[in-house]
Amino acid sequence: MANHAATKKDVRQSAKRNERNRYYGKTTRNAIRDIKAIDNKEGAIEKLPSVNAMIDKLAKRGTIHKNKASNLKSKLAKKVNALAKAA
Image (cartoon, rainbow, N blue to C red; front, side, top):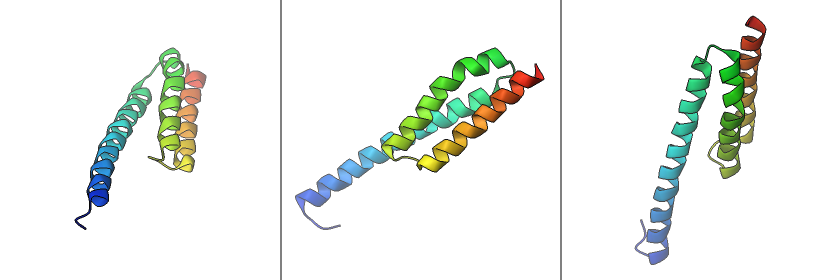
């Protein structure tokens, strides 16, 4: 690492961003896991918009790619619709 003030600042900033991205990513993964574990359609339908919003925010921040966000949302919607049909 170069011994410049700007480089040191960049290292601090990237460490902060990395920690923030890890937190939001893990929180979203936990929410996805929780919605997959739901068995009744009402609970899943109720939770789906908030989880979709979390996924969209990750894509907007650049933490995940927009296509990955789209795939995640699609898979969740399929799961919730399957619950609705099964009930």
